[in-house]
Image (cartoon, rainbow, N blue to C red):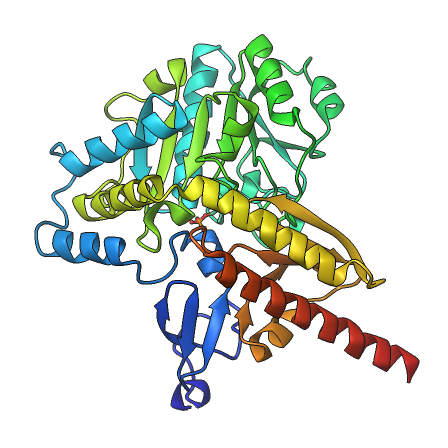
Length: 402
Ligand SMILES: *Cc1c(COP(=O)(O)O)cnc(C)c1O
Protein backbone atom coordinates (compact mmCIF):
# COMPACT_ATOMS: atom_id res chain seq x y z
CA UNK A 1 0.00 0.00 0.00
CA UNK A 2 1.56 3.26 -1.05
CA UNK A 3 -0.10 5.20 1.81
CA UNK A 4 1.81 3.16 4.39
CA UNK A 5 5.23 3.53 2.75
CA UNK A 6 5.42 7.16 1.72
CA UNK A 7 6.51 9.59 4.44
CA UNK A 8 3.61 11.42 6.03
CA UNK A 9 3.15 15.17 5.86
CA UNK A 10 0.98 15.12 8.97
CA UNK A 11 1.98 16.28 12.42
CA UNK A 12 2.30 12.95 14.24
CA UNK A 13 -0.43 13.72 16.79
CA UNK A 14 -1.90 10.22 16.64
CA UNK A 15 -0.60 6.67 17.00
CA UNK A 16 -2.36 5.09 14.01
CA UNK A 17 -3.56 1.51 13.66
CA UNK A 18 -2.41 -0.47 10.59
CA UNK A 19 -5.82 -0.36 8.88
CA UNK A 20 -7.60 2.34 6.90
CA UNK A 21 -11.19 2.26 5.68
CA UNK A 22 -12.67 3.21 2.32
CA UNK A 23 -16.37 2.66 2.85
CA UNK A 24 -19.01 2.03 5.48
CA UNK A 25 -22.63 0.86 5.51
CA UNK A 26 -24.56 0.49 8.76
CA UNK A 27 -22.39 -1.43 11.23
CA UNK A 28 -19.98 -2.56 8.49
CA UNK A 29 -16.69 -1.04 7.31
CA UNK A 30 -14.46 -2.10 4.40
CA UNK A 31 -10.68 -1.59 4.25
CA UNK A 32 -8.50 -0.91 1.15
CA UNK A 33 -8.29 -4.63 0.40
CA UNK A 34 -12.05 -5.10 0.57
CA UNK A 35 -12.07 -6.89 3.94
CA UNK A 36 -15.32 -6.42 5.85
CA UNK A 37 -15.28 -5.40 9.53
CA UNK A 38 -17.95 -4.96 12.20
CA UNK A 39 -17.67 -1.53 13.77
CA UNK A 40 -18.12 -1.74 17.55
CA UNK A 41 -16.58 1.69 18.09
CA UNK A 42 -18.66 3.90 15.77
CA UNK A 43 -15.85 6.43 15.23
CA UNK A 44 -15.66 6.78 19.05
CA UNK A 45 -19.38 7.19 19.79
CA UNK A 46 -19.96 9.41 16.76
CA UNK A 47 -21.83 7.20 14.28
CA UNK A 48 -24.87 6.48 16.45
CA UNK A 49 -26.93 5.64 13.36
CA UNK A 50 -24.11 3.71 11.69
CA UNK A 51 -22.34 4.55 8.45
CA UNK A 52 -24.03 5.96 5.33
CA UNK A 53 -27.49 6.03 6.89
CA UNK A 54 -29.86 6.85 3.98
CA UNK A 55 -31.85 9.51 5.90
CA UNK A 56 -28.63 11.29 6.91
CA UNK A 57 -27.13 11.01 3.42
CA UNK A 58 -30.35 12.52 2.02
CA UNK A 59 -30.22 15.46 4.47
CA UNK A 60 -26.52 16.03 3.67
CA UNK A 61 -26.95 16.01 -0.09
CA UNK A 62 -30.12 18.09 -0.06
CA UNK A 63 -28.67 20.77 2.24
CA UNK A 64 -25.32 20.80 0.39
CA UNK A 65 -27.21 21.73 -2.76
CA UNK A 66 -29.30 24.39 -1.01
CA UNK A 67 -27.26 26.43 1.50
CA UNK A 68 -24.13 25.72 3.56
CA UNK A 69 -23.37 28.88 5.46
CA UNK A 70 -24.56 32.43 6.01
CA UNK A 71 -22.91 33.41 9.38
CA UNK A 72 -24.58 34.18 12.69
CA UNK A 73 -25.21 37.77 11.61
CA UNK A 74 -28.50 36.34 10.36
CA UNK A 75 -30.99 34.03 11.99
CA UNK A 76 -30.63 30.47 10.77
CA UNK A 77 -33.88 28.51 10.46
CA UNK A 78 -32.35 25.04 10.87
CA UNK A 79 -30.43 26.27 13.94
CA UNK A 80 -33.71 27.45 15.52
CA UNK A 81 -35.43 24.15 14.69
CA UNK A 82 -32.55 22.01 15.95
CA UNK A 83 -32.44 23.97 19.23
CA UNK A 84 -36.21 23.45 19.69
CA UNK A 85 -35.85 19.73 19.07
CA UNK A 86 -32.88 19.37 21.45
CA UNK A 87 -34.80 21.25 24.16
CA UNK A 88 -37.88 19.09 23.67
CA UNK A 89 -35.99 15.79 24.11
CA UNK A 90 -33.83 17.04 27.02
CA UNK A 91 -36.10 19.37 29.02
CA UNK A 92 -33.55 22.17 28.61
CA UNK A 93 -34.44 25.77 27.59
CA UNK A 94 -31.83 27.22 25.19
CA UNK A 95 -28.86 26.11 23.08
CA UNK A 96 -25.56 27.55 21.80
CA UNK A 97 -23.93 25.72 18.87
CA UNK A 98 -20.23 25.15 18.22
CA UNK A 99 -18.37 22.60 16.12
CA UNK A 100 -16.96 20.05 18.57
CA UNK A 101 -17.16 18.65 22.06
CA UNK A 102 -14.32 20.80 23.36
CA UNK A 103 -16.09 23.91 22.06
CA UNK A 104 -19.34 22.89 23.74
CA UNK A 105 -17.41 22.54 27.02
CA UNK A 106 -15.62 25.86 26.45
CA UNK A 107 -19.04 27.53 26.25
CA UNK A 108 -20.03 25.76 29.48
CA UNK A 109 -16.83 26.92 31.21
CA UNK A 110 -17.47 30.50 30.07
CA UNK A 111 -20.92 30.20 31.67
CA UNK A 112 -19.24 29.39 35.01
CA UNK A 113 -17.36 32.71 34.76
CA UNK A 114 -20.57 34.66 34.08
CA UNK A 115 -22.25 32.81 36.96
CA UNK A 116 -19.30 33.75 39.22
CA UNK A 117 -19.75 37.44 38.32
CA UNK A 118 -23.39 37.22 39.46
CA UNK A 119 -22.26 35.64 42.75
CA UNK A 120 -19.47 38.22 43.20
CA UNK A 121 -16.85 35.47 43.19
CA UNK A 122 -13.62 36.90 41.83
CA UNK A 123 -11.55 33.72 41.48
CA UNK A 124 -14.02 31.00 40.49
CA UNK A 125 -13.25 27.31 40.96
CA UNK A 126 -14.97 24.52 39.03
CA UNK A 127 -15.07 20.99 40.46
CA UNK A 128 -14.24 18.21 37.98
CA UNK A 129 -13.24 14.60 38.62
CA UNK A 130 -10.25 12.26 38.53
CA UNK A 131 -10.44 10.10 35.41
CA UNK A 132 -12.61 12.59 33.53
CA UNK A 133 -12.07 13.77 29.98
CA UNK A 134 -13.42 17.10 28.74
CA UNK A 135 -11.35 17.91 25.63
CA UNK A 136 -7.99 19.13 24.30
CA UNK A 137 -8.30 22.92 24.23
CA UNK A 138 -6.46 24.72 27.02
CA UNK A 139 -9.48 25.16 29.31
CA UNK A 140 -10.95 21.73 28.64
CA UNK A 141 -7.63 19.91 29.07
CA UNK A 142 -7.20 21.78 32.35
CA UNK A 143 -10.67 20.57 33.40
CA UNK A 144 -9.72 16.99 32.45
CA UNK A 145 -8.76 14.81 35.41
CA UNK A 146 -5.85 13.01 33.76
CA UNK A 147 -2.21 14.01 34.11
CA UNK A 148 -1.29 12.45 30.77
CA UNK A 149 -3.49 15.07 29.10
CA UNK A 150 -1.91 17.88 31.18
CA UNK A 151 1.73 16.87 30.68
CA UNK A 152 3.71 19.40 28.66
CA UNK A 153 0.98 22.03 28.65
CA UNK A 154 1.50 24.01 31.83
CA UNK A 155 0.61 26.66 32.78
CA UNK A 156 -2.90 25.18 32.86
CA UNK A 157 -6.02 27.32 32.85
CA UNK A 158 -7.25 27.83 36.41
CA UNK A 159 -8.97 26.87 38.38
CA UNK A 160 -10.27 23.31 38.43
CA UNK A 161 -10.49 21.24 41.59
CA UNK A 162 -10.18 17.54 40.76
CA UNK A 163 -12.05 15.28 43.19
CA UNK A 164 -12.57 11.50 43.28
CA UNK A 165 -15.45 10.34 41.04
CA UNK A 166 -18.57 8.73 42.51
CA UNK A 167 -17.78 10.15 45.96
CA UNK A 168 -20.40 12.59 47.29
CA UNK A 169 -18.54 13.00 50.61
CA UNK A 170 -15.53 14.38 48.72
CA UNK A 171 -17.77 17.12 47.30
CA UNK A 172 -19.39 17.83 50.67
CA UNK A 173 -15.91 18.33 52.11
CA UNK A 174 -15.28 21.38 49.90
CA UNK A 175 -18.66 23.08 50.41
CA UNK A 176 -16.90 25.59 52.67
CA UNK A 177 -14.82 26.80 49.69
CA UNK A 178 -16.71 29.95 48.70
CA UNK A 179 -14.89 30.17 45.36
CA UNK A 180 -16.55 27.06 43.98
CA UNK A 181 -19.24 28.01 41.43
CA UNK A 182 -19.89 24.82 39.44
CA UNK A 183 -19.49 21.05 39.10
CA UNK A 184 -18.75 19.55 35.70
CA UNK A 185 -19.40 15.80 35.54
CA UNK A 186 -19.65 12.96 33.02
CA UNK A 187 -22.69 10.77 33.87
CA UNK A 188 -20.46 7.80 32.98
CA UNK A 189 -16.68 8.21 32.61
CA UNK A 190 -15.97 7.47 28.94
CA UNK A 191 -12.23 7.87 28.31
CA UNK A 192 -11.73 7.07 32.00
CA UNK A 193 -12.76 3.42 31.43
CA UNK A 194 -16.60 3.29 31.25
CA UNK A 195 -17.00 3.92 34.99
CA UNK A 196 -20.69 3.87 35.99
CA UNK A 197 -21.39 5.73 39.24
CA UNK A 198 -23.86 4.56 41.90
CA UNK A 199 -27.56 5.17 41.31
CA UNK A 200 -28.46 8.55 42.78
CA UNK A 201 -24.99 10.09 42.26
CA UNK A 202 -26.20 12.71 39.77
CA UNK A 203 -29.30 13.43 41.87
CA UNK A 204 -27.05 14.04 44.90
CA UNK A 205 -24.88 16.42 42.84
CA UNK A 206 -28.03 18.21 41.68
CA UNK A 207 -29.08 18.73 45.31
CA UNK A 208 -25.67 20.10 46.36
CA UNK A 209 -25.64 22.47 43.38
CA UNK A 210 -29.17 23.67 44.25
CA UNK A 211 -28.23 24.25 47.90
CA UNK A 212 -24.96 26.06 47.05
CA UNK A 213 -26.12 27.93 43.94
CA UNK A 214 -23.49 26.10 41.87
CA UNK A 215 -24.03 25.31 38.19
CA UNK A 216 -24.40 21.61 37.46
CA UNK A 217 -22.82 20.83 34.09
CA UNK A 218 -23.26 17.36 32.60
CA UNK A 219 -20.68 16.57 29.92
CA UNK A 220 -22.80 14.25 27.76
CA UNK A 221 -20.56 14.43 24.72
CA UNK A 222 -20.06 10.66 24.85
CA UNK A 223 -23.09 9.52 26.91
CA UNK A 224 -25.71 11.61 25.10
CA UNK A 225 -27.80 11.20 21.96
CA UNK A 226 -29.52 7.92 22.92
CA UNK A 227 -26.34 5.98 23.67
CA UNK A 228 -27.23 4.87 27.21
CA UNK A 229 -30.90 4.22 26.42
CA UNK A 230 -31.96 7.82 27.13
CA UNK A 231 -31.58 10.95 25.03
CA UNK A 232 -29.14 12.10 27.71
CA UNK A 233 -27.84 9.84 30.48
CA UNK A 234 -28.70 12.33 33.26
CA UNK A 235 -32.41 11.95 32.39
CA UNK A 236 -32.28 8.44 33.90
CA UNK A 237 -32.13 10.17 37.31
CA UNK A 238 -35.03 12.54 36.51
CA UNK A 239 -32.92 15.64 36.97
CA UNK A 240 -32.44 18.80 34.93
CA UNK A 241 -28.83 20.02 35.00
CA UNK A 242 -28.13 23.73 34.44
CA UNK A 243 -25.96 22.82 31.46
CA UNK A 244 -25.64 19.76 29.20
CA UNK A 245 -22.92 19.57 26.57
CA UNK A 246 -23.32 17.42 23.47
CA UNK A 247 -21.29 16.65 20.33
CA UNK A 248 -20.02 13.28 18.97
CA UNK A 249 -23.24 11.48 17.86
CA UNK A 250 -25.17 14.74 17.42
CA UNK A 251 -24.06 14.98 13.77
CA UNK A 252 -23.42 11.27 13.07
CA UNK A 253 -20.04 12.35 11.60
CA UNK A 254 -20.72 15.97 10.61
CA UNK A 255 -18.89 18.23 13.12
CA UNK A 256 -21.28 19.95 15.52
CA UNK A 257 -21.31 20.63 19.26
CA UNK A 258 -24.03 22.06 21.49
CA UNK A 259 -24.21 23.68 24.91
CA UNK A 260 -27.74 23.25 26.30
CA UNK A 261 -28.84 25.44 29.21
CA UNK A 262 -31.84 25.59 31.56
CA UNK A 263 -33.37 28.19 33.85
CA UNK A 264 -31.13 31.10 34.89
CA UNK A 265 -28.14 29.54 33.11
CA UNK A 266 -30.01 30.10 29.83
CA UNK A 267 -29.92 33.87 30.46
CA UNK A 268 -26.20 34.29 31.27
CA UNK A 269 -24.87 34.78 27.73
CA UNK A 270 -25.86 38.06 26.10
CA UNK A 271 -24.90 39.45 22.67
CA UNK A 272 -21.14 40.00 22.52
CA UNK A 273 -20.21 37.34 25.12
CA UNK A 274 -19.56 34.39 22.84
CA UNK A 275 -19.62 33.32 19.22
CA UNK A 276 -18.42 31.04 16.46
CA UNK A 277 -18.06 31.53 12.72
CA UNK A 278 -19.04 27.98 11.75
CA UNK A 279 -21.16 27.17 14.82
CA UNK A 280 -24.81 26.49 14.03
CA UNK A 281 -24.49 26.79 10.27
CA UNK A 282 -27.43 25.65 8.10
CA UNK A 283 -25.60 22.52 6.95
CA UNK A 284 -24.55 20.98 10.28
CA UNK A 285 -27.87 21.93 11.91
CA UNK A 286 -29.94 20.42 9.09
CA UNK A 287 -27.94 17.17 9.38
CA UNK A 288 -28.20 17.05 13.19
CA UNK A 289 -31.93 17.66 12.90
CA UNK A 290 -32.15 14.64 10.60
CA UNK A 291 -30.18 12.62 13.18
CA UNK A 292 -32.64 13.53 15.96
CA UNK A 293 -35.71 12.94 13.77
CA UNK A 294 -34.40 9.57 12.59
CA UNK A 295 -33.51 8.48 16.12
CA UNK A 296 -36.95 9.52 17.33
CA UNK A 297 -38.82 7.82 14.47
CA UNK A 298 -36.88 4.58 14.90
CA UNK A 299 -37.07 4.65 18.71
CA UNK A 300 -33.28 4.43 19.03
CA UNK A 301 -33.24 5.08 22.79
CA UNK A 302 -35.13 1.81 23.39
CA UNK A 303 -33.06 -0.02 20.80
CA UNK A 304 -29.81 1.10 22.46
CA UNK A 305 -31.09 -0.34 25.73
CA UNK A 306 -32.25 -3.73 24.39
CA UNK A 307 -29.24 -4.33 22.15
CA UNK A 308 -26.90 -3.04 24.89
CA UNK A 309 -28.38 -5.55 27.35
CA UNK A 310 -28.03 -8.31 24.75
CA UNK A 311 -24.40 -7.38 24.08
CA UNK A 312 -23.54 -7.23 27.76
CA UNK A 313 -25.28 -10.53 28.56
CA UNK A 314 -23.69 -12.50 25.74
CA UNK A 315 -20.21 -11.14 26.53
CA UNK A 316 -20.66 -12.06 30.19
CA UNK A 317 -21.73 -15.57 29.20
CA UNK A 318 -18.66 -16.06 26.96
CA UNK A 319 -16.11 -14.52 29.32
CA UNK A 320 -17.16 -15.04 32.94
CA UNK A 321 -15.10 -18.25 33.34
CA UNK A 322 -11.81 -16.66 32.29
CA UNK A 323 -9.61 -15.69 35.25
CA UNK A 324 -8.51 -12.55 33.34
CA UNK A 325 -12.11 -11.27 33.21
CA UNK A 326 -12.69 -8.75 36.00
CA UNK A 327 -15.89 -6.86 35.28
CA UNK A 328 -18.30 -5.70 32.60
CA UNK A 329 -19.85 -2.25 33.01
CA UNK A 330 -22.08 0.09 31.08
CA UNK A 331 -25.50 1.34 30.11
CA UNK A 332 -27.08 0.74 26.72
CA UNK A 333 -24.51 0.76 23.91
CA UNK A 334 -21.70 2.15 26.12
CA UNK A 335 -19.90 -0.90 27.46
CA UNK A 336 -16.53 -1.60 29.05
CA UNK A 337 -14.99 -5.03 29.65
CA UNK A 338 -12.26 -4.77 32.28
CA UNK A 339 -9.49 -7.37 32.28
CA UNK A 340 -6.93 -7.90 35.01
CA UNK A 341 -3.98 -6.83 32.83
CA UNK A 342 -2.99 -4.16 30.36
CA UNK A 343 -4.61 -5.20 27.08
CA UNK A 344 -3.79 -2.43 24.62
CA UNK A 345 -2.65 -5.06 22.08
CA UNK A 346 -6.16 -6.49 21.99
CA UNK A 347 -7.17 -3.84 19.46
CA UNK A 348 -5.00 -5.59 16.85
CA UNK A 349 -6.40 -9.01 17.77
CA UNK A 350 -9.82 -7.46 17.14
CA UNK A 351 -8.78 -6.14 13.74
CA UNK A 352 -7.53 -9.64 12.80
CA UNK A 353 -10.98 -10.92 13.77
CA UNK A 354 -12.54 -8.12 11.69
CA UNK A 355 -14.07 -6.20 14.57
CA UNK A 356 -13.25 -2.61 15.55
CA UNK A 357 -13.15 -1.48 19.19
CA UNK A 358 -10.62 0.29 21.38
CA UNK A 359 -9.02 -0.02 24.79
CA UNK A 360 -9.26 2.73 27.34
CA UNK A 361 -7.70 3.21 30.79
CA UNK A 362 -5.15 0.53 29.76
CA UNK A 363 -7.20 -2.52 30.73
CA UNK A 364 -10.77 -1.90 29.53
CA UNK A 365 -12.12 -2.94 26.14
CA UNK A 366 -14.49 -0.16 25.14
CA UNK A 367 -17.53 -0.77 22.92
CA UNK A 368 -19.52 2.14 21.47
CA UNK A 369 -21.32 0.59 18.49
CA UNK A 370 -24.11 2.24 16.51
CA UNK A 371 -27.36 2.38 18.52
CA UNK A 372 -29.64 1.19 15.70
CA UNK A 373 -28.36 -2.39 15.35
CA UNK A 374 -30.50 -5.49 14.88
CA UNK A 375 -30.23 -8.37 17.33
CA UNK A 376 -28.27 -10.47 14.84
CA UNK A 377 -25.77 -7.65 14.17
CA UNK A 378 -25.38 -7.23 17.93
CA UNK A 379 -24.81 -10.96 18.44
CA UNK A 380 -22.17 -10.96 15.71
CA UNK A 381 -20.34 -8.12 17.47
CA UNK A 382 -20.55 -10.05 20.76
CA UNK A 383 -19.13 -13.17 19.11
CA UNK A 384 -16.19 -11.38 17.46
CA UNK A 385 -15.33 -9.33 20.56
CA UNK A 386 -15.51 -12.39 22.85
CA UNK A 387 -13.38 -14.44 20.42
CA UNK A 388 -10.77 -11.67 20.35
CA UNK A 389 -10.61 -11.39 24.14
CA UNK A 390 -10.41 -15.19 24.55
CA UNK A 391 -7.61 -15.44 21.96
CA UNK A 392 -5.74 -12.64 23.68
CA UNK A 393 -6.05 -14.35 27.09
CA UNK A 394 -5.01 -17.75 25.70
CA UNK A 395 -1.91 -16.29 24.02
CA UNK A 396 -0.96 -14.61 27.28
CA UNK A 397 -1.45 -17.87 29.21
CA UNK A 398 0.67 -19.77 26.65
CA UNK A 399 3.48 -17.21 27.00
CA UNK A 400 3.35 -17.38 30.80
CA UNK A 401 3.35 -21.21 30.76
CA UNK A 402 6.36 -21.42 28.43
C1 LIG B 1 -14.83 13.23 23.13
C2 LIG B 1 -15.16 13.96 24.37
C3 LIG B 1 -14.89 15.34 24.52
C4 LIG B 1 -14.16 16.14 23.46
O1 LIG B 1 -14.86 16.21 22.26
P1 LIG B 1 -14.08 16.72 20.92
O2 LIG B 1 -15.16 16.77 19.89
O3 LIG B 1 -13.00 15.72 20.64
O4 LIG B 1 -13.53 18.06 21.23
C5 LIG B 1 -15.27 15.94 25.69
N1 LIG B 1 -15.89 15.27 26.67
C6 LIG B 1 -16.16 13.95 26.57
C7 LIG B 1 -16.88 13.25 27.69
C8 LIG B 1 -15.80 13.25 25.42
O5 LIG B 1 -16.05 11.93 25.33
